[in-house]
Length: 416
Image (cartoon, rainbow, N blue to C red; front, side, top):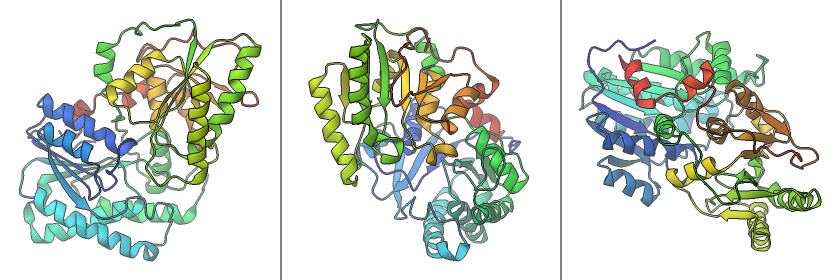
């Protein structure tokens, strides 16, 4: 389904109350926008972010010629675990609606605008619908704004179609019904399981949108083969990438490293381990202690490389190109129905995936044509994954083609 517009997109607006700090999926669209601006994909780009937007993100956008607005006070994840009913989130939705009305009033002065929302909970969906209705009453030209909303969060349906949370299903059903009243709102799903889950909720099969984490086509064109590296006979394992979080297994890393380094010595195996993380500043004592222990291990063993800082896209690409495998110590219960952008990166580079227990991580890896191995009592297998090629995008599945499609080409087709 597309909007069948006769004209092209002229203006693109990223609307993301969750865009604040370095790291995470929220910041990824910033890179796509800067690329779009530099290659003149569209005439005009704007970003409407949180009031606490990190200065370096703002600077990157402004230097690329993008207009930046600190529009939201709303805490994006404040009601994330609230399933409903609507009355429990009334105040939150009212505040977000008011902030969105201000954004839409500004956008309504332009023509051929796409307003893009990289993710949204049911509360956000209702706020979008309410704000669109309020502004439409005031300004008749608001239908020049086409809203593209990404469904990333599970609506209370398991991967095999069973009900997980009836109240959450009802909340999303209500929100999607409200959105459906607006012809200029287009809803898209982030992955196949969300696509199926939302079909159970709304009886509609929403189209997939490409992952906006990377410029996949550019990587394919520039990295047909792996770069040369020292000690190329050693398996290089990406142990952790991203913000330090307990539910992603960050606190298990010291024990994992200690056990596997000793096991490697006993079995005469050679491996290098890479740990990259950022801290938001509100981590608990467990995470802070893990940081101390990880750094202590890295100072003792040369096979462990630690980056305790944000890596830009080029630096991150290099690490994925140099690696052979990726470890996911994620909490399997929590990630049973929760997606991970890091898995999309790992599978794009064809890194062999190591996990403790099956979850969305393993199911998505298989859908993308990748492979995985479960750890044996926390230990990596003795047979390394060096033989597993990670040349980007080889052996594409139909599903992986959709996930790794060019974002701007996809958006243009959707708009037309």
